[in-house]
Amino acid sequence: MLRGKRVIVTGASSGIGEQMAYHLARMEAHLLLTARTEAKLQKVVERCLELGAASARYISGSMDSPSLPEEVLSEAENTWGGLDMLILNHIGQSSFSYFSGDVGHVRKLMDINFVSYVALATAALPMLKESEGSIVVVSSIAGRIAGPFTAPYSATKFALDGFFSSLRQELIIEKVNVSITLCILGYINTESAMRAVSHVIPDTPAPKEECALEIIRGGALRWREVHYPPRTVSSMLLLRSFAPELLDSIVRGSYRVENVRRT
Ligand SMILES: NC(=O)C1=CN([C@@H]2O[C@H](COP(=O)(O)OP(=O)(O)OC[C@H]3O[C@@H](n4cnc5c(N)ncnc54)[C@H](OP(=O)(O)O)[C@@H]3O)[C@@H](O)[C@H]2O)C=CC1
Ligand SMILES: C[C@H](CCC(=O)O)[C@H]1CC[C@H]2[C@@H]3C(=O)C[C@@H]4C[C@H](O)CC[C@]4(C)[C@H]3CC[C@]12C
Image 1: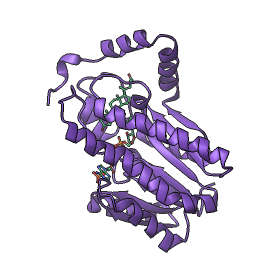
Image 2: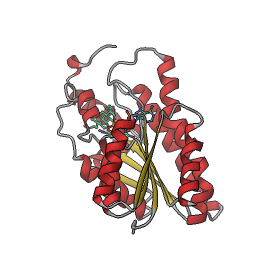
Image 3: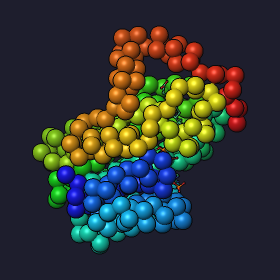
Image 4: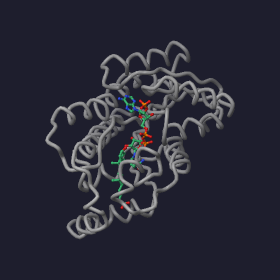
């Protein structure tokens, strides 16, 4: 379904975004990748071309720059003349620890993890309306159920749900055939996530390669939501609707709280 399609992946220099780029390359899509680190993006682009991407290029920059979203979408318009899928995946750095009271960090993280997603989707919508394309928003179980030690991060992910679920309703009312897929992910074995939480959360994380493929599948099939790993996410969501306090206490009890670093 994605052969020859024009796809933007943000946060594609590592982790789940990098794996999505490789899957899309094998599917022979055209790729435009973004992240801050040019050297890593160059390597990912090279690998994508080896794997069979129809084309692959990148733009480097930080998503707290207000001009970057427009720049990325102009690049897509100028090189491809359109866009079929926008995968919003990047996140700014945040620690897994008690809230330090740093309001500036919350503001910056909101800009990177939320406002830039809105700006990218806004700039992409004219092309996506034309192609009847898709927006894929990578979120987290921490954007549906707030556990401890992720207050600023959780807030940015809850905001994504509010904005994109409302936008989805408006597109349906206006009979605009652009799908919005929200991805609710549990713990995945990317380097950054394991570095942040493995000393506190003893669970085995799910594989990033399979996670990346499920996100792409959900986007291509225009699903409303992707839940991955499906059993963990669905059972946590179910328990939250029937017994939220029990769930909160299970989550607190499963953490090695004594290992949490204070920043
Ligand atoms: N791994 C997990 O357990 C889970 C992950 N998720 C979600 O999955 C997505 C991917 O996470 P994961 O792969 O683990 O994260 P990674 O840390 O591996 O990747 C994050 C990506 O974002 C880029 N990035 C970081 N800061 C910025 C910035 N300021 N501007 C632009 N790009 C930036 C990074 O590249 P660079 O540093 O070069 O800029 C990198 O490409 C996120 O949306 C995350 O919330 C959800 C639930 C669980
Ligand atoms: C452990 C949580 C799920 C509950 C369970 O017992 O399985 C994880 C679900 C979501 C994770 C966080 C997340 O969304 C990604 C962040 C990425 C950052 O780089 C650092 C780590 C995260 C805060 C990560 C931590 C584990 C979860 C809360």
